[in-house]
Image (tube, rainbow, N blue to C red; front, side):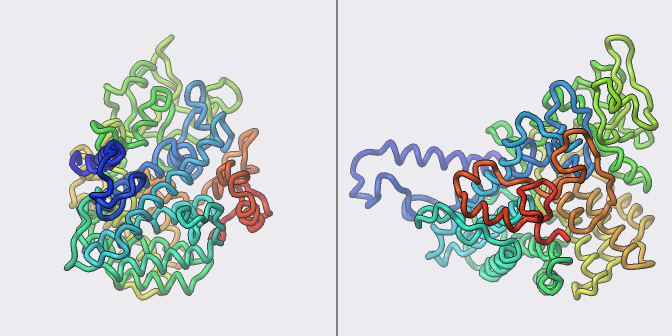
Length: 540
């Protein structure tokens, strides 16, 4: 990965060289303030767009401080140095909530801007049609994330400042979704294996056109299935188109980015969770651990560990915990270490702490994300996976869509894929395919009713996404499906009126930087308020 990330660094170097060369511009026919396709390789924009997207969907940029706890995958005792986790665990604002809520918006628009530069620089070059298409796919990916998290958002007029469009309209989400699907379809149709591959791709595909098509069609399926309640006809049309186009065939096709920490590109989840207060106080939730334990899920002993006894050991990242599945215990959401009524020691079934005296800790028995996996700054950032794709195909089949195969077959594939998808975390995360197959066989899809099947599929989707720290995707699918059934935390001073948040409010700067478009978008929200509890268009 050093080579691919060094490509991003070369972007800065080349720009510096261009600025530093102040003579003989006429001989190269170059405006000294601009880079053009003739003197700049647009491939560099693609790798930067990919990395910026990965940055947008991880760590303090949003998911770990919001969706991870909203959808009850992580929990935190949120006191002292980790009080910013009140945003996720109790829906209570912290001192930096306004900044946190804007981060995914800002970073995803940066990703889209970089992708747009690659598109503009290759639109007229038929030999670079695959680079152009890959950039279009990444731009769709970024816009998809933005609209799912915030609602209506600029798309048709976004990234057009060079054309003097600096106050873009917010596309309504129903129109935005149609545009995303059409643009994605166009990008995939344009790809040509006989033409040059993108040379700076930092996904595992290294520019391979066949792999990019699988990725694009799997993304199309995800986007289509968001519409099952809001626009069933469009959902069916594009889910079937995605299946016919060819989605992921195994966990080896998963879309993810491996960071390059030595060169300054690290996994932001690791950066967050390895912060001292976070490392001590953030644990897997009771909801998730109970779910995995109930079926003897082989992932349980891979993703979770109980720290060694005592406060010092709980805070020491060099001391591995106990990964025996039988001892894993999830932290219930909504508790703290503040000594009052919501102190963790007052939670139902509290198991007691570990250590004694000054070395005692009341949360010592609760399972944390395993350090060997999630404490690695080069841990993968997952984007779209085979397991998620197969589970969505299972649901599509339940709904009567023509996607090839039965719901039972797709569900089994999704369960096995979810177990095997952990492998990119390293040898400590590799699970024997035989064990994955045995687990899937022991837990077949419940086909006794449509509701029973949908419940089982979407609970598995939630757990599978959560195990990969794909928190926002777990939350979005929960909003759409209603599974798993979650009980909200009703903490004093919460910002969502006692319900699990359904969106993030727009960045506070939008009301002053783009006031007319912002006001129109807010007016279309449920209740006409830029609220955490307002549902986006497809969230029925």
